[in-house]
Amino acid sequence: MPKNKGKGGKNNRRGKKEDGENKRELIFKEDGQEYAQVVKMLGNGRLEAKCLDGETRLAQIRGQMRKKVWIVVGDIILLSLRDFQDDRADVIHKYTADEARNLKTYGELKDFTLVENAEAGSEEEEEGIEFEEADIDDICEY
Image: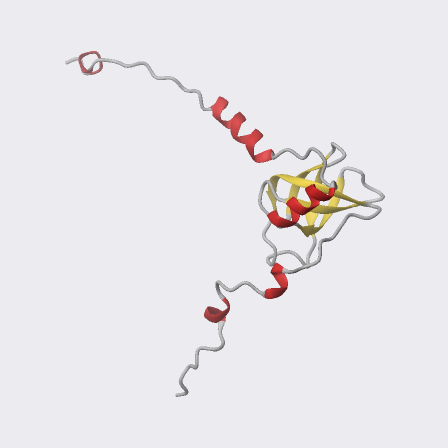
């Protein structure tokens, strides 16, 4: 049986970052495209995104990105708007945190607030359950 040389297989690729991923060109929006932030993941390759123009759209992750690019709540993405459906769009690119910062310095992302912080505040308000303290004698009466 041949010995493994340690140069191939899935364990060799795991944990390594490819050089192309770190040094990719920044993609700006064109006509029919819009910057957005992920508000909610819906499953089945769909998500709800808050666009820069103020509208909330239902977006579908394109097939080339599925299972290769992981999108989570709060990510900045580039949407391709549909001509025939204004409330739906397609995700065509996901920006890393560094790329999003660069877009903000170039003035492309104007007044984009983080959705994560707003959602965390609303969840804390819902969890306001109060319990009364009781003596052990009141609970266990024989």
